[in-house]
Length: 466
Image 1 (cartoon, rainbow, N blue to C red):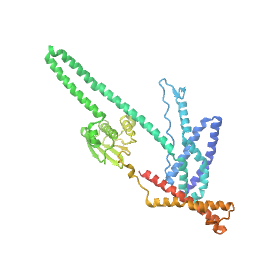
Image 2 (tube, helix red, strand yellow):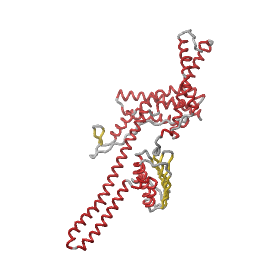
Image 3 (cartoon, helix red, strand yellow):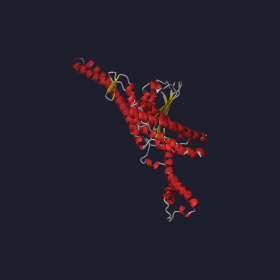
Image 4 (cartoon, rainbow, N blue to C red):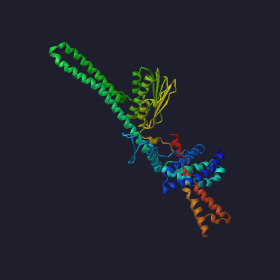
């Protein structure tokens, strides 16, 4: 199987050579003759080739090469007058603004030009690695994957740009959620508490007019005012609990969810296993998410029993809510699950919902790295001692065979310098000199490669296992 895939890599090099020539011709036509319509299909073709290469490296070399491309631009937004804007120009349809945005996205993405550089050089590198691909396919595929990762993996700047874009989207979602919450609070105050207070004021005004003429009617209105003030106080307490429940601040997430279970009309079982309390914003987001899921189970799912499990996976907080309702929950058909996703996204959390028709419905929420201790770096795995010793030996000794015993005597032999000094190869018989020089250079290069590869492979394994 590996041998067949090694042959596939060699065949792919031929396709890439043709694609590289076509891509260079397209670039010349785009930037010299202004045929800009050729650029997007050329970029899409190159990205298909790089995607194929990433899959090959992942499946047959065991190396994951992340996708470095910037997120696609959102579709154009229609203005209030029905037009679409692109820079300083207005258009009747979104077709041209969308094309302009995709053009800017493709030409401004550094990964586009790294892909083109890889496409030009990959056929030559494949030819150099052809003996290893045919004789030792496993080693050849691994070396080919390392070369592809050099240009196709995201750089530190690309990762930073992706994180900035992710934070921008998360901030927008958090601001939208906060604005929606403020509108809900304003609506509750306006429709509930404010109306009750206005009614209370009018009742007290009527009491003031009747207190001398009709004391009995005044007493009846005072009793009504007392009931109104009690209802207003209850409304305010409910509103405060909707903003941030006191039990959540005082006793934590577990007890707050148990209080939710006691108030729910359903039979709710709660299991909590947390080593410590998360931060207050995380607790609030998870609490209101559980509250929304309970409300959905009772209102839409016709459930009778709900199980809530709050646990942890190392530093990750995980909450699973399972109900025996009719199922069919779909985030695209309502705002409840979308609101939960928005709450969790502010903390890089995710919501996974499994709700087949007929039930049961399982909602799993995961919020990463919110239960870490005061020194999270103390939990980082360390490299085994034998690997550390190999890396130290490789870095301290690689220079010796590579330079004084490899490259330097090779240069001296090329220029005819007969000063043997302490160069081992020059003291050997003539037929053995060049093989010894090449072997010393390869040995030094291999030691340097080992010094690079061991820490890189171990850090990659540690990241994938976390």
